[in-house]
Length: 341
Length: 174
Image (tube, rainbow over all chains, first blue to last red; front, side, top):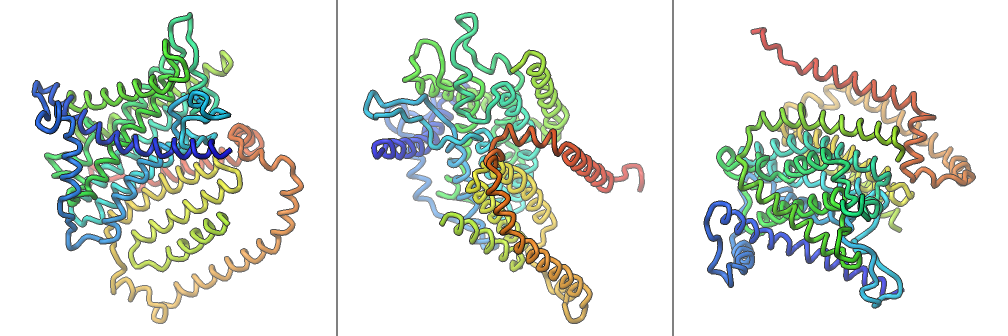
């Protein structure tokens, strides 16, 4: 009994540590990929191939001065980055990232690679990540600055608009899988059709996958939907007045949210830890590869597409994405009724 | 133990909601209260309800609340507001509130006095845990309570159309 508890605690600690590191790794990847796309070299001086650049960034952020505008609301100004970071970490809590394993016979009974397994895991991720908007809104309001407030208002409007399409895309996968548990959904994607095509839901629900990824990019405020921090219009948006570690927490929250969206997309659409060639005990390798690929796509999109206009964002969200998502859910439901689950 | 923790958070934050000068803090305390109530749902073995509570109330409705409060930009109730609502000079508001408060206390007392019977009735039902299953919940909602469900959605639709109509700006009028 006790080894199981220790193993679970170790998994939780490991997940936390890796999430923390993923932000640092993503900073490096972002710089390198951006440089590559712009025909530059990127960071090279700090360590071999600039690998220590995230470390240098972190040291810089820690030792910078903490500034707070005089007219800011002191309590909420401090609370806002905490909410953003906590929501980002907590959203990952119900995302499984590997098959059940005994760690090569180290344990008597297998333990699942997840922080906690809830039977409504999909909804928990949805609920907790929707809490992150409070961090942004409160940051914008508490800073008592017009740029911050405008950035926060834009962000909340954008998040509310795209959350609907996001939820609808989730709903169509839930309909296909017949379960709200992420572990069940992943296990429903084991095996292959005709012996070679993996039984991933992305092949049944390509539209839902597309909608999910577009809404996910909008939810995490990444380019081309990065209106809350549109530099040309709003200085830096909701975190204009933030510096040092408080700013770093928003920064970290953004990257961790990206990781969470990619991890959930992997679990929902790309078969999680199931894939050809690699045995299921080492499924987390597939999981990491898929999440890494989606994160690369994120960065790729950011440095390829220009930011669209705000009215275009709203038009696209409400007039195209949401109707498409609703139609997809209706079509899926009809298909399941006709063919049987 | 956990129950008392969540209950205490819910009660204290709800009480503090009406004691705040700054409406933003009221909104935040209300969110904390919703979070604690959602914790109580988890304790009642109804994780689906708990998550829905967070998504619908804390995630969607309260964001709109916060939005409105921020846009109205009413950081604190100022002197003019206080004068308009002064309980001695303008007693009608306070009288109305007192009637409502008395009603609430009477209702609460009536409800609490019936709790014992309810507990026995719930305990007698062996399928009390069925509520936690999403499948069973959906089936019940779309069969036994279909009329109430549809009536509620029509009500919300009517409210939405009304809000859009009221907020519509007359473009061609000067």
